[in-house]
Amino acid sequence: MSESPRRKIPEAALGRLPIYLRILVDLSHDKVTQVSSEQLAELAAVNAAKVRKDLSYLGTYGTRGVGYEVQFLTYQIQRELGLNQSWPVVIVGAGNLGQALANFTGISERGFHIVGVVDKDETKIGTVVGGVRVKHADELTQIVQAKHVSIGIIATPAQHAQEAADALVKAGIGSIMNFAPTVLSVPRDVNVRKVDLALELQILSYYEQCRNNGLRSVPTGNQSDSVSA
Amino acid sequence: MSESPRRKIPEAALGRLPIYLRILVDLSHDKVTQVSSEQLAELAAVNAAKVRKDLSYLGTYGTRGVGYEVQFLTYQIQRELGLNQSWPVVIVGAGNLGQALANFTGISERGFHIVGVVDKDETKIGTVVGGVRVKHADELTQIVQAKHVSIGIIATPAQHAQEAADALVKAGIGSIMNFAPTVLSVPRDVNVRKVDLALELQILSYYEQCRNNGLRSVPTGNQSDSVSA
Image (cartoon, rainbow over all chains, first blue to last red; front, side, top):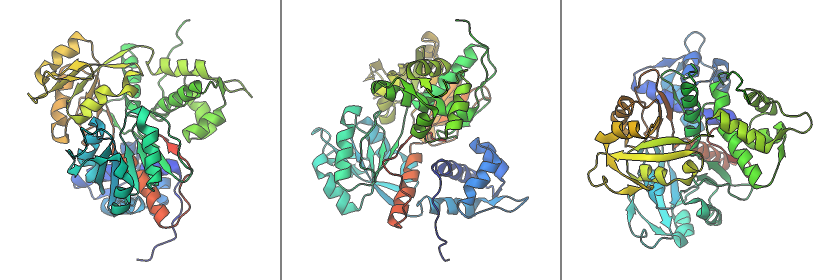
């Protein structure tokens, strides 16, 4: 199959692709083989026109009256997101969060494998986390180069996050996922995605407040995703 | 001040309020006192019309040519999200993730306080996590009732998440934040928000793939949020 020229996908559409992907994987588990844009839209909490537009960036338009083939659409999204290859990932910070991430099946199942965990805490160095022996932060560059790592995760406390980012950038990392509740300063060609663990709590408190005020604005049986545009 | 009748905020707009809130808090730290919808839009990676529409649900429209007052808008969003009160939260699962969440400053700083942590693992019971002594999962209902908890966090492995959800629902919890990579079955009046720790990795892999293909679609110095509509 010849590769068609790839277009840039807008940020917002890109953010929804992993959502569609998870929905498709769930549908596959339930032995569903076809899905309409309306069904996808409902499950992703967006409108059907947006689903069709988002998926059109993959060069896929579905079949009128039938929708999309679950298995092929899954493949297309995975390919677009670069998930049909394995990505070596390094974690900075071997505390509770770093350990949780290194052991998280939801990460390894999706094509990412943790090839290095570093810390500065001597009591953590040498311990095994997620099947990887924790190394000293000074060895970061060596790990990144030896294992061809391009994605780094910052799982340090907020006050050490910038130092971690600087070390990752110096080691040649181009993409950083930051779990520390702080804004990082990085060169313009480095991608940073920030994960806010408290964000969803703030949405739940809204619904709880509505509930307490006797307002019927509590969605029923809703399992919203963390990105739900 | 008399309370105006509250309207339901659409799910997508609601998901962006915590983003605006964090931007406003950052602006405050930088001593910025006014912000335009264009500035907010750029920082939140949405368009300005959407920002104005989202904020109109709070009954706030800004001032033409001036924008919004940072401090007042912060207050309005916090009030809307129910963050001007303190929310007691219980965590099910005292493993690495549960411990990380209990200690996470980004949670406690925003009006949530962890009043209980439960587990079934006897080796964890009695240990102190985030200032709270871990209790047996059998005591969940008692903790929820004694501390008036309405929000529960599931930080168990995937295979125990449904059991945790059932226990939270039985204890009277109305809002659940689920970190386990699994879909929960709950009664229709219970809110579940799912946090996917790997989702952002899938977006980074897209950019890394583009980079490897020599495509200029890497956003420059971008710090996108986990919800970025």
